[in-house]
Structure formats: C-alpha cells, structure tokens
Image (cartoon, rainbow, N blue to C red):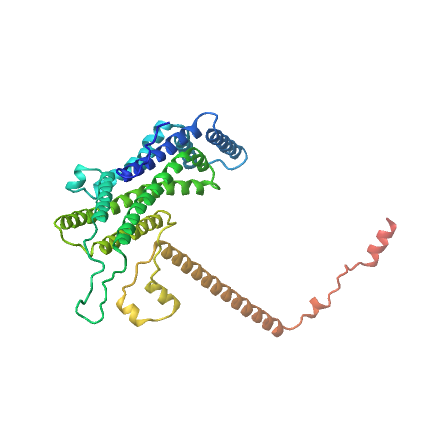
Length: 398
C-alpha cells in the first residue's frame, strides 16, 4: 500500500491535508476494489452466486414460461457483460470508472473555467495554501487600528470606537471558515467517491434482478454526484481564490506602507462566510439534480375539441387560443365510436321496420279470417274412414 504524507502544522498545512485526503481516497477505492474483486473474496463470491441464479432463472423461464424475445435476450447478454466488467476486471474498471471519478473533475473544471495568470503557474492546492499563508500574515501584522481611540475627544462623554467582531476574532473566524470549507467539501467528495468505487464489485451484481436494481441505480447516481460535486466545488474554490487573492495582496501592501486597514477583518469574514454558504448550496443543488427521479411533467392544456365535446363554451379562451391538433389515437377512437353508433342506429331501424311489418301482416290476417264464412263441410267432417257392411263381412270371413 502507498504511504500517505503526514500532516504537520504551519507551512504547507493545506497542501498536506488535501494530499493526504486524496491519497486515502485512492487507497480506499483501488485497494478496496481489488480486495473485494479478487477470486475467493466476498465480492467475487457474491457476483458468481448472483450470476448462477440469473442463469438458472433464465433456463427455468425457457423450459416452463414463455420464451424471451430477441430484445430481452440481447439485453440479458449485455447485462452480464456489464456486471462482469464492473466486478471482476480491474483494468477496464480503472479506465472506465476509476479515472473518470478521480481525474475527470479537474479536467472538466479546467475546461469550464480556464485559469488566469496565477493558476497557470501554481496548481489549485498551492493557490489555496498561499491564500492561507497571506491570512496568517495579515492576522500577525493586524489592522493598525487603535481600538481604544475616542470617537469625540472634545465631547463631555468620551465614547470609544467599537466593531461587531474584534479584529483578531474576525481574522481567526474567517480563516477557520476557509479551512473547514476546503477540508469538508473536498474530503466528503473524495472519501465518498473512494468508498463507492471500493463497493463496485458488490453493487454490480445487483444489476441482475429487478428487485435489487434500484440499489445499483443509487450507487451509480452516487458516483455521478461525486463527479459533479467535485467539479462544482472546484469551480467555487477557484472563484473564491480569484476574489481573495488580489484582496489579500492589497491589504498586505497597504499595511506594508504603514497605513491602517480597519475594515479588513469584517470584509474577510464576510467573504469566507458567503463562500462557505455558496459551497454548501452548490453541493445541495447538484445532489438535487443528480438524485431527481423521473421527468418534469408540465400541466396539460385542454384542447378546443374537449370543450366542444363536453358542451362547455369559453369564448375568452377559444378566441385567443387556436385549436390544438388532435392526436392520431384520438381520431381513431372517435372514428370507431362513430362507426359503432351508426351500426347501432341502422340495426335499431331495421328491427323497428321488421316489427311494424309483422304487426301489420298479423292484423291483416286476423281481419281476413274474421270476414271469411265458416265452411260446414270442412268443419263437421268425420275423421274416421267410412266402411260398408259388405266390407265388414268380408273382413270377418278372413
């Protein structure tokens, strides 16, 4: 394992702290990943077990359930390749994820905000260290103001000058906010990124199943927040240095000439407090953007056809807003609805005509039977066959 630089007080404090944090993050990310991803470790065992279950469930689906389509088959193969690349291949993981998470933010920040003449000579940690040294020097020389001076020397009531904060307290609080903002923001993003990179073998196997896919999505969003937050924090620190570097140089130049700078403590404290709040707000904003779920949905505007179908009339709205174009699905549904209603009306009309014709025929037949006279021969005809006496005697002899 690589040895991280020790932190000492005094000169080089900021550089050593940032170097140590970056070293610890790289150790956690690289060695943690290789430890969990090596054969026989917890991470590799978990990934192999989840892969076995995934293939077993796929085979059971092929045997008993409906066979998957070509699209599902291709996606499953791609999913297996992604998991094996993230969990068991350190060279590919280092190129695709590790270097992007640790080295990408600085390159992106340099493209977004090109440095000036001072940044072209010194790196960002060196500029931060130089600003901290200037604050210490300004605190040492002081403001040159007589704190016990009287406001009105000739007045009967001598009142002394006063400020909201003492000079030394304001200088000390300003440097405290400066150092804590740098260490807190950079440390959070670096250590958090290293931890997420170390857990990559465990998180990659969760991509196989839909029940655990949300955890993998959260892990991926965390990495995106680390990259975006590092870019945002670097931009804020660069702007802060662009503000305080000329300010500190001017304050030290004025004190070197022997003049007082009574407003310097409050100005420095206000700058540091404002940029500390700005750093927190920047991280909150980027986290809000990164972890937002779904698409932003705007309220739907009712179309003119809806008012016409519902029977409501809004002259003010219809006069100013042109009718919206109907969707194709809506036109098809309306056509089907009109066809069904037309067929129903045709069927109802046909049934009514048939019933009216049958009723008229029945009434005509009844009136015809009522007017026709009764035929006696047909009415009183005997159903039995007539037989003579000779025929009966013949049948008896047989």
